[in-house]
Amino acid sequence: MTAIRTRRAKLSQVKLNYAEAGALDAPVLFLLHGWPQTWCEWSMVIPALAEHYRVIAPDLRGLGDSSRPDTGYDTLRVATDIVELADHLGIERFRLAGHDIGAMAAYALAAHWRRRVEKLAIFDIVLPGFTLDKMVRLGPDGWGIWHFLFHASPLAEVLTQGREEVYLSWFFRNMAYRADAIPPDHVAA
Picture 1: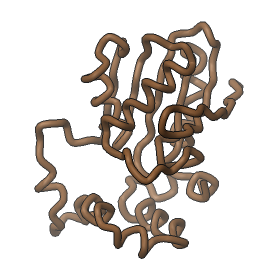
Picture 2 (picture 1 turned 90 degrees about the horizontal axis):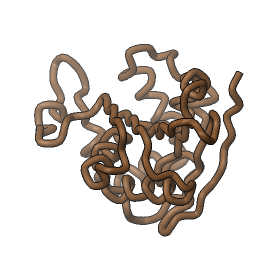
Picture 3 (picture 1 turned 90 degrees about the vertical axis):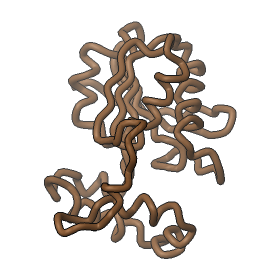
Picture 4 (picture 1 turned 45 degrees about the horizontal axis):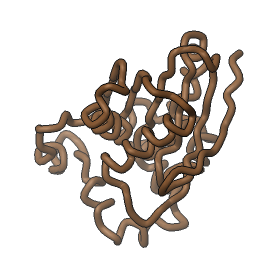
């Protein structure tokens, strides 16, 4: 089994925690997680990917064990963090995969630093240029993505602070395809 190592990098605006596996001379693959996950989202696939790639899976700013600055949560700033991490590690070109908010940052990174990204895979996002209006609305078929608007409000932090596990567990039970897909230790993280 491939060993997964966790490390930290001090960048210009944030300290990023990241997991790494695979040979240092292998082609590089960055994996950007979604909300509300951490690098652990990828933990079950990293060993298989590390047979072919140097896999680097950071905790995005404000999540997991990365630092939580007061500002800088737009997709371009998060993408810049990944470019700075690549620079810090001496990596010029890489493959990039992103899920959910990680896909938003991956798309921004590929758009602004095209020569750095060899291949891009993004999933579970609304593609840029399409609106969220139909997804945000509540409807008879489900909850929509009401949490985008909720999280934009300062009220979200006040209401969930100290209750993060209860709040996030609700999402996993009610909005995931399989409620048991996220192991308890990942929920705790």
